[in-house]
Length: 313
Length: 148
Image (cartoon, rainbow over all chains, first blue to last red; front, side, top):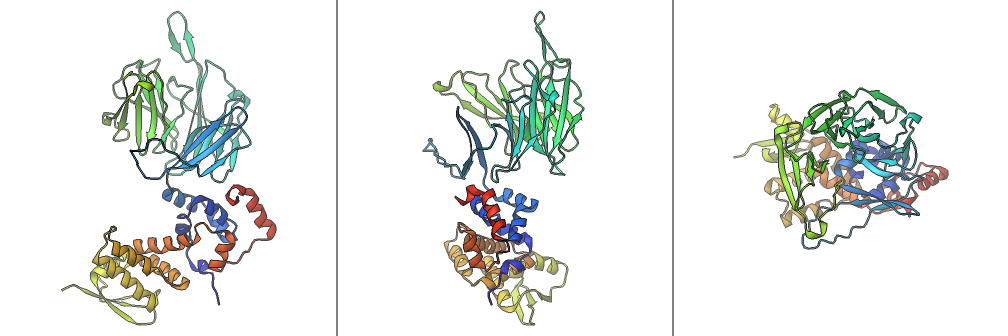
């Protein structure tokens, strides 16, 4: 009598087994039977698979007639002899809307469609192609020189996915060349709740609409300019659990620097693009400890790249 | 002179092993540390399975060097067993908390699933398809890209 041995296995073992198989097969496994279908949809499976799968890169390719999303899988083979890497995407797809990838956290992507006003905001699972649209109220409409930036991440203990929106006015006094922020506000959307909540922003800081919050350690980080206080560039840090803003300092830098803030593995990093000869990357060795900013990499620019501004994701 | 531990399996058969071998199992390790070292009952595991687990642990105590080519071929041969044995090994490794044995056996099952279609998977593992044709069709439609 042939038996289905999976019925005797505790779900944690089935999850262990299924998280070891490639994504395409996993999705096909959804139709093996109902218990597998339910298991593959469970949060436990998602977590287990995330911890076992290799890192991926999502690329948004926008051409005039069509948009394409591609997911590449990174394998751990470092071949320094061959610099022209040809990766095959593990999956390529398009979605029924146009949205550039602005952020990612725990396997989900946050997308923004700038062609719509208010912007179309979406959270998408690139593997299952499921997505939701975050409905934005009409007063989310903004125009230059007002600044809007977002952040996307999960809270540390409750693991809730949240989208953060920061908006502020920006008035440049033409005579004194001083910037002022008469109005700033922040809203948070917790996935599953269907609505935005207002959050206290604290002291007004100047954000940039060209960057999105770097997600690390359950917090979001933005480079901000403290117009009204220290008149220097700082890191604005938003705790996704407590929903409180705080700030901390950067390593010493030229105030005219072209800086970029990003998360690299488990560390917060700052890239300094101001020099013509090199790009310097600082790493915060101990999270939250200002003294631990360490100059980690110096990338010398080859002549071809002089004058360009690099953005790293 | 190493300490000996006696393990009694589900049907009463006793296995005498070196302490180092038993310590490969976190479950047994806790029991040994708690002082019940004389005779440890392992009621969830049958004699043939416990014998295989002990064989695995003995080999592991001898050498756990991942670069050992002999060890690799030992692992390959070790999992060349029928399905009932393989799944019983997973259950035993889970109960006895032997991480690398669990990894080996789960990976073996995963390798049997990799790249197979749902029909093939059902056949290999005797899984009953409890979806209606319409339900299954809907899942395939919702995930069309994976079935191309």
